[in-house]
Length: 370
Ligand code: SMG
Ligand code: MG
Image 1 (tube, rainbow, N blue to C red):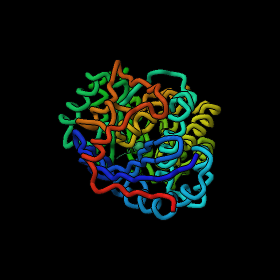
Image 2 (cartoon, rainbow, N blue to C red; image 1 turned 45 degrees about the vertical axis):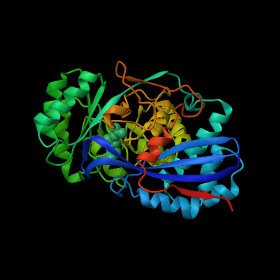
Image 3 (cartoon, protein in one colour; image 1 turned 30 degrees about the vertical axis):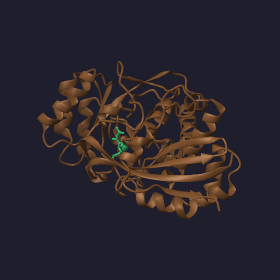
Image 4 (cartoon, helix red, strand yellow; image 1 turned 180 degrees about the vertical axis):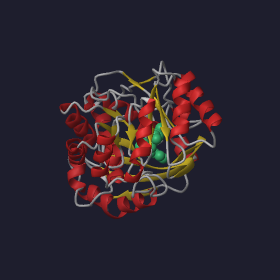
């Protein structure tokens, strides 16, 4: 494949409700889309980086810069193979996995569209629908939280994840456990807000029969998560820490994570995410598909990934209307708590380019060879 041009579209889409985590509140999703033009056709990829470096060190402006200065020139000069060649070709740049993942996704989309193969078939999907959970932000108060959770339960979501932080943990978790009843699937995500000093406090979460606690400590402290995992009954699941398959395997072997949240953007691409899934499946470690408030472009790819056999827990793959009044593709609609895996070539979704223009924050940046 020859890449003729890489276009970077920076857009801002309002969220239907603010989303608060332990590191901040978001009212809109500012997102970078990659549109590649190749000799076999076009493809789209979505970058999961946020506007600020709060979830990860990567953020939209840095992604734009590293693509413009390093990654795009390398692809435009050297690319002759397909998506599988992207990661090796870009290895000379350290890190910047979200930027690399977006480029690889766009190239994979172009390649598979040309081949008439869907993301799901290419990854080895074994299901045509995936079970969906919903990630619920920190609320101003418990009644507001319960209203929001009730709405999602009524819509059919199969699992609820609550964002927690010191001062917003035991009380909201107890209230939501009461609302869901004993059988309801419930988990929590701290986004690194705690330290080892909080172990005895976090042990109190054991009373609520949680599926898992996600990333309580900072990403580098994998050993600290192993200490916590030995001290509490609730399974520990890493998110931010797991940046590659080898890190996942190390964390599993240390006992720091007994379940893995897989996000293609965080690990450098869907192809690495598929490898990570394989490594976890071999070790009987359940995985689930994380979310980064994706538009329909990223969501289509996530849903295809979540259809692999090792994804045995509902993912943060919620329906389009949980995030946006209008999506950039046909909306993903919840049916019996599931989303349908697209079957068309590539991501299987059509990008509504008029909406890309409508939400554009500036003119697209066009990078081309020569
Ligand atoms: O896409 O529904 C979604 C959001 C899921 O909670 C979610 N993601 O740490 O897992 C996580 C967060 C990261 C994004 S916060 C802006
Ligand atoms: Mg998380």
